[in-house]
Length: 483
Ligand code: CA
Image (cartoon, rainbow, N blue to C red; front, side, top):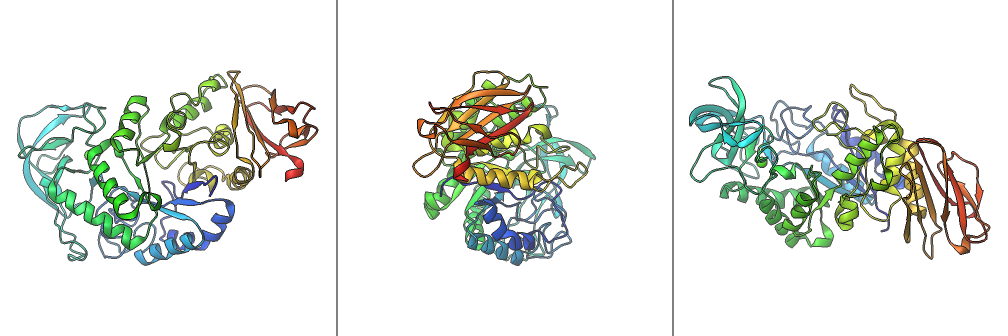
């Protein structure tokens, strides 16, 4: 299928009344009709409460089935409702991707005493204490599940770090000591070693952990029938472990049948290249550099050099590996990676992911439906639906870039045998016009601004058109007769 689009189905403050899965089931057909081909679902596993967004993973094997942490359902509904929603979405032609959180576990059942050292928050290679006896929440026995699916009880030695000592009431990062035990080496080098992110950091080197997670992945895919994994927090997890797990899944499912992508929150080009290579190019990555460029441009008062907006992005350097996006649940205001793209720039940003040749675009529910938490934003439902239609109808063929002005860029998708060209023009500063070539066969044709902002124009005898755009705006144009 050409020009597929996925959507992140949730934002941080998505309604937690438990109706989320039921609503997805109801919306399945409409979403597909609107142009959504894939859906990134929120973490399905039980977290700390029925309001846990899903990243405070308690039990991987509880998808809203057992009475644990004061609730049977997760924030989003019960396991039965989840399976029902996935089936309806898939029946409607939408692929379902699970958000898989393997870096840490939280909300343990009991505390344990063990030896650890405190490390420097900003350089985790640096110990700042001697060996100490601490007591921490590292024991998980999942009494509510009573051994169904797996009887593994997790102990401190299945983890490599914690952030709280009960005994001394101290919040700090503690590295758990044990025979040959250390942070994973094949993680991000930020903060000395970025293995530790939060809660109980899972030790992926431990053979029991490895066996459990492999077993879980097989069960989970079988049980839910999902079409792919969105790996969370990849820069904090051993890249070799993720490589091996992905390899295992692909061998079981076949490369064509299971889509792997992940969050590697990293701007550095070399680190991104290294990660893609280490994981055999089996895992696509969110285009974090492009997101940062968009945010910077949106805050630049029109002074960002738009000619460089795709420089050093994943979509430019590794087009086959890029999941392009504008914002997500972490980048939204007030969240851990707050880097929100300003509202005036959103339509421009969506044009830059939806009307390009490369990248698997991921639209954000927080933009589509609007944010509903403390910071509220207007829904861009109609705007994005219109853009999705433009993408499906016109985003084909060669791509000619006109990146010749710092504040005004444009490009033409030249179309193919079955599709007419698409012209996109962006100005982040003043009103502007630009002559672009759409094709000799278009001579004399009337082009209409599908964004609904400007008057029609006529293509001249050589196949050129002079397209216009208002200040801080984007226009997108196609042959009027092809509508
Ligand atoms: Ca880790």
